[in-house]
Length: 527
Image (cartoon, rainbow, N blue to C red; front, side):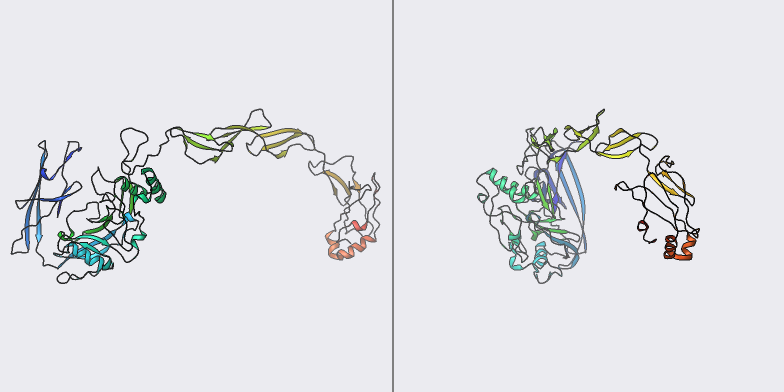
């Protein structure tokens, strides 16, 4: 079978017109061939060359000539070489698969099929799909899909006018299909209600919604369906099985009985719901905006070109969504959020979101900062939230208190008074005195360096008295801290050292406040 696509075009490649059968002349070995029909813009010719009675090889000359109404013409000459084979002899392998994408049933795994010389493709389908035994010389296929023959039906015969009507794989294919069935009146009483029902079933932007909207607007009636198979006029009156060689979108109108598979061929049995318009067939004028084949769902809306707004798809009737050429952000009523709004279609195009604040200080304002939303540009003033950073005042000089806003980083500085000394008593073997823990300066007037005397036999025990009044008591209390010299500790131990200390009369200590020391104020180790 030969397919021819011919057209006239300008020098820059722009097409002028498609050639018809009356513009095209095809000859094989000098004999004019007649077109067997057309599929879309392609002419079909069935070529049956006369082979010589003797010899294993033969040669044929094919000439294709076209001339349009303006006298533009061209001719192609092809030489065809043939080899003689015996009927039923293996000549290679082809691939066969079944495509039911339009029903949401997917695509079968490809099946490798051994091609036999002289075997019509109708036999190949019967053998590969439901395991048909063709007898001598074609026999059976080693590989099959294993679908039951009881679910298969066809018109004509395997030898002539074969047309595949119905196929089933033994499961509930019909009821599992993602498809409508019944009558359009089941889905609504008018155009708008039916289209709304389709969008509700499949999803407004689903390719299947575009498919069934196109079927409805094309005037194709709905129908019932089989439960365990799919076939001609199931779901819609434009449904049925097509075949393609090569897996593309060219679907011959000639019978499979008139075609023989060749080595390397890809034979696809593809289901359509709309006379092929939903699977890529048809010319530019009647193809749907949606094409479903080989598991892919492709939508390319055919928007009106007359300049009217909004644009409408000529296939599925969908109204083109606004492209939102001019937008602005608007605030919600409660003022807590904002959203993007289209000035052309007067619709919100984003969901409300919390303001995206950018916070900046206000000059010469210690109490507030400014907040501006990056989207809607709303602006407000808000109180600082300060946290303490540092106080630079010391015992020797005044300073300042530094606080920083946790939101905008603004720093507030306020003067602070000079700090009071923090006294700490220091003791040596000879005396004790007070120094400020902050600045290290010896504090005058609070204490004086006082010699520290211990009783006899206490040379190895250093008892440091750290005396300071406790403010919480009306009576002055004094805490006693001590340290032992290492030698005494090693020699006598803590208990012995304590006994020696209790037997020793310490020097009398006097200050401006009456003091009383108690052995119970000593650390636990001393007791």
